[in-house]
Amino acid sequence: MSTDPATAINPRDVLYTVLRDLIGHREAARLIAANDSAVRAEVATAAATATPDDADPLIVDRFDTAMEPAPEDPPVLIVGAIAADGRPVALVFDAEARAKVAAWLSPAPVDSSRERRLEQLLDTIRTHGGRWTTNRVQDMRRRQGTAPQRGTARRDLAELHRRGHLTAHGPADGRYYLLARKADRDA
Image 1 (tube, one colour):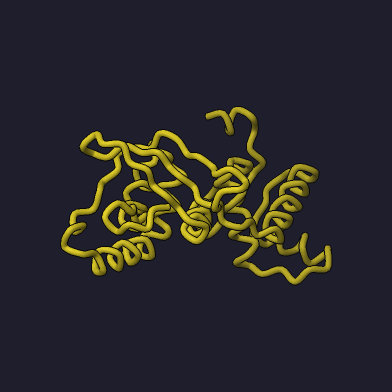
Image 2 (cartoon, helix red, strand yellow; image 1 turned 60 degrees about the vertical axis):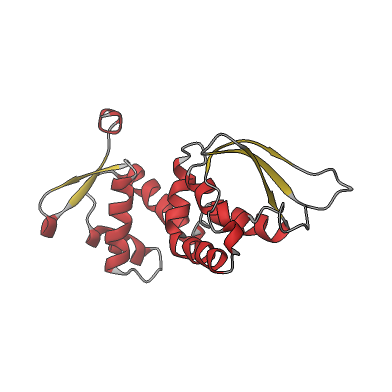
């Protein structure tokens, strides 16, 4: 990593653009949008502390390769990229910047208790079939010894419907769900 200010590349100046344009990766774009205000604050801070010589940030159009250092070298990640004007660019991420980018790109932690609850509900619906309402889910959970919340039951049914496991029927104030058939899931 260069220590000469004239040749050093500040990853913060280009981080937002690089990640946003990262070969059209939808998941990266979604995660960046979720962290957009934090990323913009970082870019604004970097721009505010920039000297007049580097006032124009370098815009990166695409990335070509990422290179890990050898075990004996400092722990930096070098990303080979192409600037908007066609110049090759090397983005150098130190361990701190790399950890920050990894945190932005990592999937959100899974709420395992929610996933277990949804799996259990789907398994019960598959076993018993029929119409499933918020009241029926609450009754089932009450018999299992848990304290069922109406809102939780409603959200769980809606989530299973959103994932394609159930089909919704009836008006909003009388909604019930049925197990989706294969033809329903394929449509």
